[in-house]
Length: 182
Image (tube, rainbow, N blue to C red; front, side):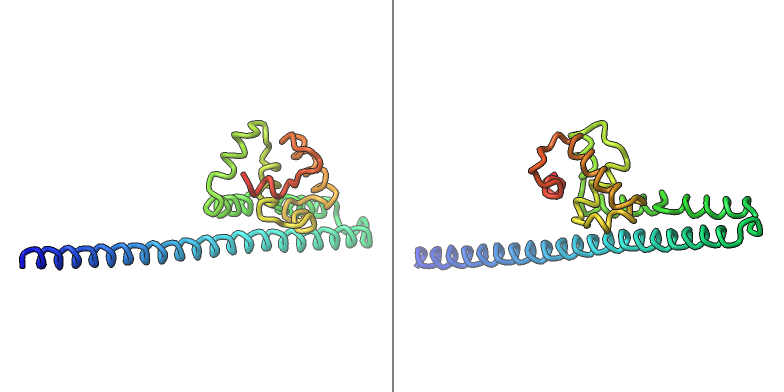
């Protein structure tokens, strides 16, 4: 009887242990799903910030072009002081520091330590190269990067070339994949 009772108790304990393990596994799966959802949400926020920066810069560039056209049309009727003031204000707000700080903060939440790891690899990397690296990590196209960085498409291509050279990457290696692997 005692052996039978001990065996039943042992079986019950084993069942409870298996149930506890299954419960813990389920909890871990739920937590993992929650974390994945948070990462996806943060990635979406980063994309939204980047898209908003691009849109804002495109609008400011359109306004700048319109302003230049108005100055051409009106000539001296549009005082140079006001023209220069407006032009300077537009230029100052294209890819402003506040936009990039918000972008970098959100980016760091999703891609933890990316900038730190990149700085460790290349201590001489500049802030503009860090922005380019972040855009590459997000897999943005050159056309999407240009307004976000406040430079031309050709400027992005030049920056990519210089970054590749600074990282000492061969021409046949994929710069985007390299950034994703950091």
